Length: 115
Length: 114
Image (cartoon, rainbow over all chains, first blue to last red; front, side):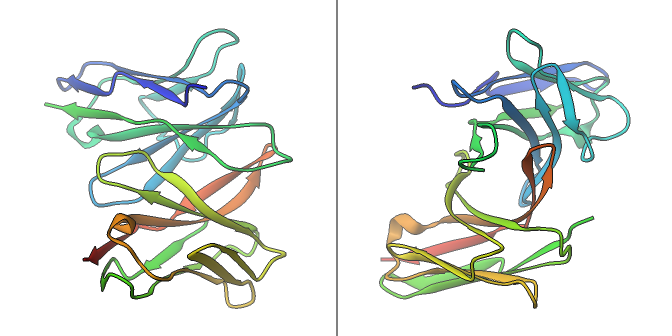
């Protein structure tokens, strides 16, 4: 049973380019969450999605960031016109429908470096 | 919004000692409190969690306590081992859309010396 998959694991972008981060949830999980982790800091919630719906985007920056979780395929976190401050590790997590457990299973993360 | 404070930021103990990490939160609506362990360069992994209707929970060498009135919760690790060395994050979670959204503390780097 494969865990949460993220790709790429490392991504280098020049300032002004676009970054696309992908997340495939665990089998049977319908909830996806994205987090950002800056060096020496904790995880910051960005967005929570279910298939074809954004449920909670209270942690998303207002500009340049967007997320989707289409009916088919992985969830995508897109960062347009990247700046140096976007350099961070981006983790996604997935969970089952609420009820039996609230545990979120994390992927290995994508380390984004903006040069 | 929720604010979670976590202390200490670094904790160094000898193998076999106990380790205690403390967190406080601000939003009384938070009612689910997971703890995650993150080894260097790895993904965070849930080690224990507690719901707001429970005051204490134990799993082998790990225990968590919750004081809802004072809005603080703690992680206790007994008989520490070198493999317990990692960064530990607490979180206070609020309900949203059928799930829980955590606000994490800044983490505690636990170092267990053999």
